[in-house]
Length: 135
Image (cartoon, rainbow, N blue to C red; front, side, top):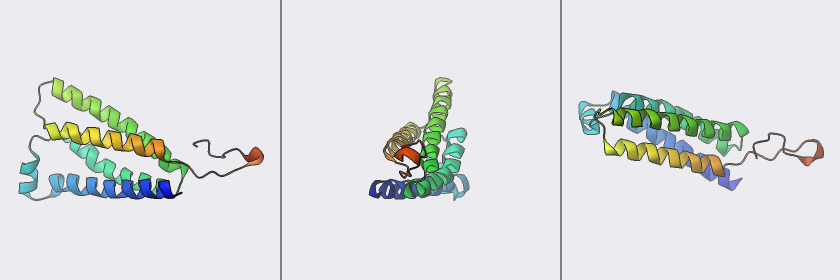
């Protein structure tokens, strides 16, 4: 499916960019850490670690595997939980950056779109019904 190849490829690139940007703040030069401002450690570590899942989900979607779409929806759920934790952090009066909210929102919207548009390969079984149920 052309759509899955586009979505999956874009998700892999998105994941690699997430790994690079998070890795620069976590492990990069002091300038990169200073430029990040008031980071929220939970969000930063989650975003970095989830970059690996983004790449895996992207590969699954590229290959039209049902587990790729399932992983995309699990990423959406995890992002919702982290956004809730971030909101709690903000409401508690702790320091934060506006761009953190923007980045979380971008990631959430991106994965909702990818998970919604991705399709599992239509493998048929008896009665010509999709075998994976995630269509």
